[in-house]
Length: 202
Image (cartoon, rainbow, N blue to C red; front, side, top):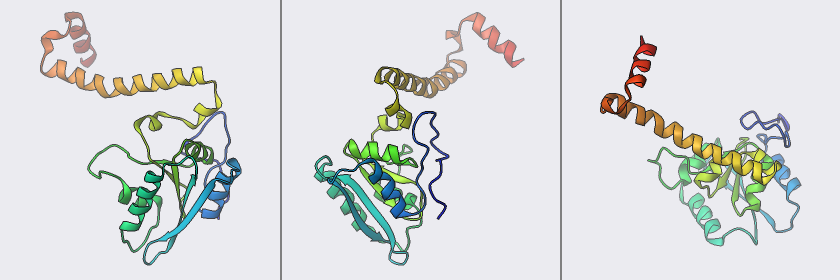
């Protein structure tokens, strides 16, 4: 086992530098270090007919919604597969709609982020042999959250999160708006801007 190292996919300036490793027991201990509540439950099971991969569901008993917990357990029991080699296998098998391009399950390398999600009522799916823990259920706003948001004042981080939403909207809308104007409605573009665009292309 490579031990506890700094996560390379979610780097923060302020906050712990610990990251999950490939060992299931070490990953569950990293979460349990942060939540020392007796209500924190670790339900272990094995998936994969041939690989028999160890998987742990971690949640707080009196916070988690029972219907969501049962839904996760039912989905894990439904599929039959020879081997689970990474948490990505489970992510693809239990997601709601495989045709959508948007992520439906959040994955993290940070124990503090997983512990925060568990305290919010989510379920952490820890898979042996992979340093990525799955957090379910996930909403769109959870993908705009950073692990560093928990370590700063709420006013500053709320403003930063609003900037993230605005930037995401502009990055999705502005290119399409520009193409619509230049290709289909060039008369709507001011003459000075048209000349500037033509000069920059030249």
